[in-house]
Length: 213
Image (cartoon, rainbow, N blue to C red):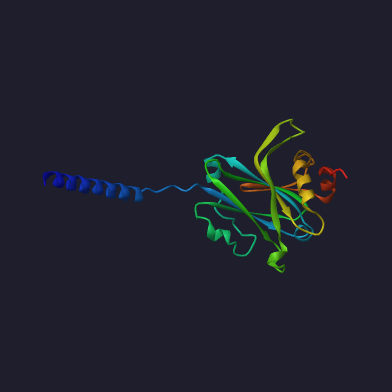
């Protein structure tokens, strides 16, 4: 009888300890990483003709990231759904691209995450008018020919925009031509937390390495 009583006491103590541990675990909060999300708005003629966007996230210190506005002062698109999907303390950026080749660099916190999406800038177009595909992702770099400095890209996403003028092989050629593209003096649009490099059609013809026939 004494043995049975001791076993009952020990079992009760073990259960109480288990319940306490579970309750303590339930109160643990996992801090979510800070996030930058960038919405890339696709305008004509890129929307119809197709092309390539190189998306380059750039790590910055928390101090730099904290100084960025949480939302655009004036949204470029009506009621951007991403504004509701991300947390209030995260950052939402918006940029426009329209030429056959663009490079979009944007800041995200070194200890955080990032995301991006593409939307049509043509209010009258069908939602299916914009078709994209990430065909390549990986690190890269280019050498600034003016300074001789190597500029590293920890990650580059090559996004192909389907259209009437180009196919996926064009976007692959764009990716391997990053050194030529960044040294051809493309038009540069800067904002809080982002830079967009836009190539003219003439610059595209000169900078993008042609595939051998």
